[in-house]
Image (cartoon, rainbow, N blue to C red; front, side):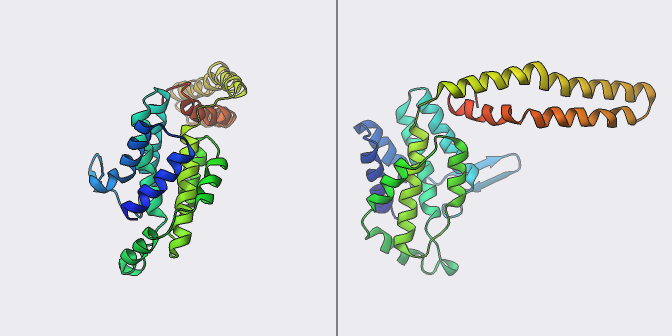
Length: 246
């Protein structure tokens, strides 16, 4: 997607969110940052340049989480910048490169000549869920479109929905109550049960030189882990709301 399209989408979203001038500038700068400086992912034994049209979901979610943590720290400048970078990849995901990239430039040029569909932006800003799971799912559902109008509509809708989800700082008191309750069960019952069952099973296995005690303890460990699923789900959301570190 050409810079003109990225910036046009960014301006429409910034208008819809009533971004102040400083945050608006950071947001639009982030929207084209991946084209200015090619991003690389580095790790033990690997290093590769991030593909824009096939960017891994984890790369986009990395910027989403960096944006969210920045907003939680009241660093709105960095929050808007990283949010813009995440949306750049989402928007490029919407554009099909075609067979061997032969129609890529022509398709992007056609998109650049289109007006931003404001209805898609409005729909995205109103139809969202403020959670990382929603954003991750939205990224997965973003598929390359050959039709320029369809590609632009999808890019606008997904970008607006993700922006609203990241910037929504509201947190219900009911969620905090559920998280505290799940944490208490995790610390008092589920974790002690899993660790205790494992410790007893290993100890008796060593004493009796037989694997049967450890095998007998496995159902208790599995049951404790299965019962602890609400805690793991809520822990992810707790990090999203700033109640624990991510």
